[in-house]
Image 1 (cartoon, rainbow over the protein chains, first blue to last red):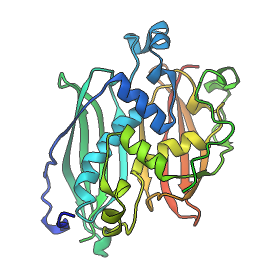
Image 2: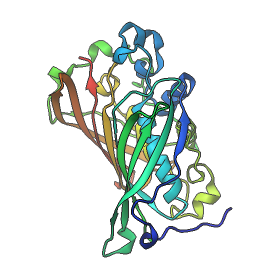
Image 3: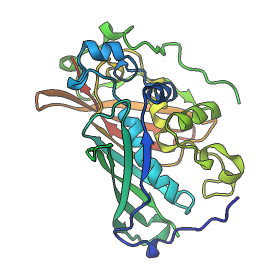
Length: 149
Length: 161
């Protein structure tokens, strides 16, 4: 096992940016996520239905918003879990649909630091957002993580 | 660990119960929904980790998880998604064909772990119309067998009817 390097609350600078993470979304991956998440809504898995109702004006399936939210959580847990931290909250608004064929890049930046009398309750807040391959924002939100050291 | 058992009412085909689903006009703020407990298996955690492309060792590797702040395997934070879809009835609006997710907020307590028996309390806390779209807002309190909060989930959908 690689040696763990714990995150230290006092050493985390405001504005610190995590390394962006990119995900390519396909219908196969969306369908796999439907099976994993038990969300079989036809808007995700049934192209014929989406075409028939002309879903969101383009008539294609769309990815689960919760899959995008999972991506927004992952960029932060990849940083804080090995660093000894915990996830406190995860919130996101899905402002544009993610469709099969899209490539989504997730960005995260520390925007707030919340020191607490008990240091194990110290937490940071990150602004997290996702852009598609054209640079259009598809989701925005915040993630908070407790940094107990 | 025993194989996962989904509730008998669980239905993959969301069209089957579409006609029984009450539309936005019929929903009453404050109403609560019948749910069933769900036992979280390592298999579901693995499937979910693969489905969201998040193969963190804290979810999948016993040794790494044991030597971490978690002291053992945990589930990804958004594991509450399959938990809620397993626990809620097939005629509830969260399974309405065509419903769109505008955004969600998850506040976490203790992590969910393999073997946990998980309970969901689901209540409609608001409904509103905005830009001619019909929104619901629910609060889902998700707890483990010890009564500890795993997640307080606030969110809703834009309903097609």
